[in-house]
Length: 440
Ligand SMILES: Nc1ncnc2c1ncn2[C@@H]1O[C@H](COP(=O)(O)OP(=O)(O)OP(=O)(O)O)[C@@H](O)[C@H]1O
Ligand SMILES: [Mg+2]
Image (tube, rainbow, N blue to C red):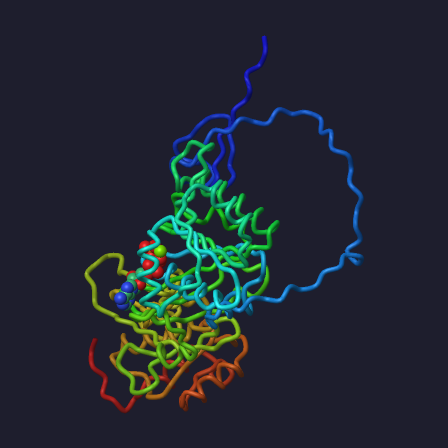
């Protein structure tokens, strides 16, 4: 009896595969992600072996990068757009992805052939936005969602830069699944990748992420593309932060800061002035000097400590890793005599920015200590340093650059691990003792 072709069920999110279907993927725990694939029949390959190449004989010259005309975007890309690369720009709905890329296209269209493929908005809507941004006559627009047609147009027109807004709307008829499904999105990215490399088109793919970051979200594309940029920021705040999550041509630590205005996104070359409150201080606020890539930036950290009746007091972090917050609260209690066992602790980074860097630990601890004791931190004070579990402070990277940034903004007291040994000492130095303490 002939054996039926074997099916495997595999998860596109994590790569798990199995001979039977599961509603919940045993690999990554996601629901409904397993899709059926026919296992390729094992047969002997007929391809001949290929000659090898010594790396030393490979001739390569670094292609000149294309300036996007948006300095903050250039910075995050690592000094401009690399020709024939594929860049994924992810972000929540309404954060300003279309606006950012339209601005870049507009600047590049002066000297280069650029194309905007819009599947989400009509050309008229794009025109209205372009008019709001100051006109963009020479951008060519294609309103199309069929993948085959988009690829054929790119092959014929060969623009230098193309924006696909968004990859979730592209649709390959032969796949049969709905637009935006994992299979469609992957197929679209793989085909566009080939078109980009073969025809020398640099492509920006716009991808939506849902709040939970899943469901055909652009995460499945991250392996395929050259760069992944994340556009973040609260829709209700004017500031937006662009950062690279992956970059094959540059550092992933760079940060671009924008302000959303009626006339589009305006780059903020000096974010410290916006996010760091360097003048008088309030109870529960401290300024951190964090380092994002090559750029030191002053950020205001706010904390609120409120008595609670809950058996498990709340630790709520916005812009800070919750695990890091729990650790800082524990170290404060154990080594700096700031007991928070019966209080809710809320921490927020002003302006909707997120910090991942351990160098911001100290300022977070100082903001919480200030809130808990009801004493403001001293005026014109900033802090940086990593907190160890023993209550000792550890040096943070590139201290000189941070000190320079503080000096530039007129901050005269900087608490650093170089002069201050422990967290308890830092708390003592930072809190202005002259103000009579209020009970929280
Ligand atoms: N007239 C205006 N004045 C100020 N800001 C505006 C104006 N019009 C739009 N915006 C801002 O632009 C944002 C929408 O930008 P954009 O369409 O580029 O976002 P998007 O990320 O592409 O969204 P989507 O996911 O819906 O495609 C709005 O959330 C708003 O903040
Ligand atoms: Mg859009």
